[in-house]
Image (cartoon, rainbow, N blue to C red; front, side, top):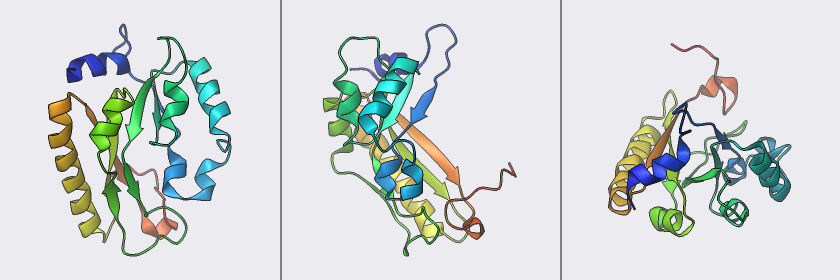
Length: 170
């Protein structure tokens, strides 16, 4: 399958835009992130009814979307990395790892694309390098399967207590 075919499932045919609702937060082990989405079956059902262009889910959550019958459901964006940088007291050393056989899982789940983080955190140069290597390895594996890769850049400020941003674009 061509990457273009998968991208056609992500982007609205008229506007060319994509609304991707991310509810893959449970993957990161931060309890604050799952408030309101603890019942993933109900959450996915509500999102399918709201009809965004895509829903971003982890490997364990993805079958909840893909088991919905019919062709008029949001596309699956599969989160394929895990990191330990969230929370009020993030673990050290920081890491970001791509799951095993990420592209294979995405193909078997009929995902429209895979999503991986690119962290920019002051003082975390090794983590940034690891993220860049993750993107590069994933891109290589994804090309042969025609699987688009979505890179999610996250600029975070550790002084804000873990996962924090100050809203300043600079």
